[in-house]
Picture (cartoon, helix red, strand yellow):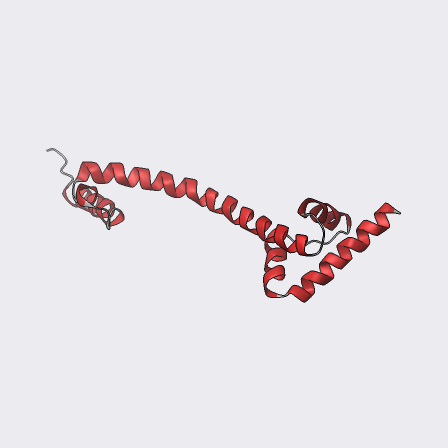
Length: 121
């Protein structure tokens, strides 16, 4: 007696079609095209989870650069002296401080400048 895949095949196809829902035309209606679409969409999703991290880091650096320039210090010098002052804030938190709480960011910049002065002496 041969094996028939009725229930398993239907479940597998339903899973694929559900994942391809919202695509246009054959990309959501035809099994072969749906399989290709789902494979590509998973590849893009995997890739773009990493790209998102890069893009946010770029955003934080851009924000910090603008905030540092307002205080008369370059971004690279600020980050270098931040490490020298042993302040353990990352770029995400620093950019949030610069936007949401400028007074505290001013204090951080002052601490960094003080560390820069003490290192120069």
